[in-house]
Image (cartoon, rainbow, N blue to C red; front, side, top):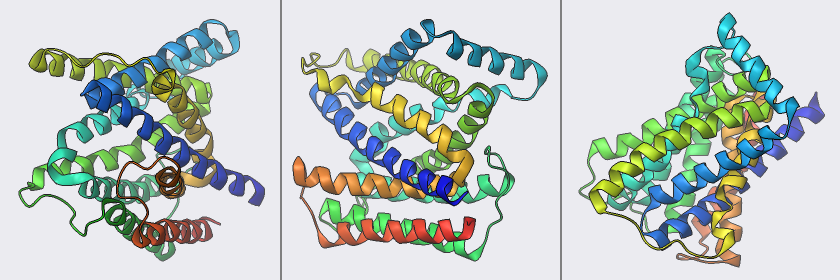
Length: 311
C-alpha cells in the first residue's frame, strides 16, 4: 500500500510538470494568435481528435465507453459526472477574462485557494473514487501551507509584492476562486468515471465536453473580434492536446489512491518545480527569485503533511 501511495505522489508531481509544460506551450500559441481562448480550443480540439482516432482503433477502449453508458442507464453514474471537462473550459476562459486586469499572482492564488478548500470538502464528502477522508488538523495545515507556498512563488515569479491591479473588482477575483473550486470537483468526477470505464473513457468525456464549451466561447470571441492571427508553423505549438491527454488520464488513475487534496498539492508542487526549471532553460519573465524557490520548497512540505495525514 505504501508503494502504491508513493507512486501516486510521483505521478501527481508528474501531472504538475505536464500542466506547466502545456501552459507554456498554450501560452506561446495564444501569444502568436493574439487569442488565448483560441489556443485552448485548439489544444482541447486536437486532444479530442487524437482520442477519437485511438478509440476508433481499439475495441477495448470502446468497451469502456459501453460500460459508462450502461452505468448511466443503471444509475451507477449520473450525467453530471461526465461533464468534468466544463471545469477545464471555464478555467481557461477565466484566465482570458481576468488575468489582464487582476494579474497572474491574484489569479493563481485565488485559483489554488479555491482548489485546496474544495479538495478538503470533496474528500470529506467522498465524491471521489477513494471514498471519504476526514478533515483533520494535518490536512488543514497542509492546505494552508500549500496556499502560502503558492502565494510566495507567484509573487516571486512576478517580481512584485502586488497581487493584482488596484482597480480589480471582487467579482473578477471571485472568478478564479470558483475555477479552483471546480478543479477539485473535476478530478473527483473524472475519477468516478474512470473506475467504471477506465481512465481513457473519463479522458474522452473530459475533452469532449471541454472542447464543446470552448468552441461556443471562441465563437463569441471571434464574432466580437472578427478573427485571430495566422496559425504558426512550428509543430511543437500543437502538442498541448497530447500532453493534456496524458495528465488527465494520469489524474484519473492517481486520484483513487491518494485522494483529491493530495493530488492537488502534488500537482501544484510539480507545476512550481517545472516552472522554475523552465525559467532557467527558457526564461520568459523576471527569472528566478528567492521567494519563488522558497514557495516551491514549501509545497513539498505541504505534500508531506497531507501524505502523513492520509497515511
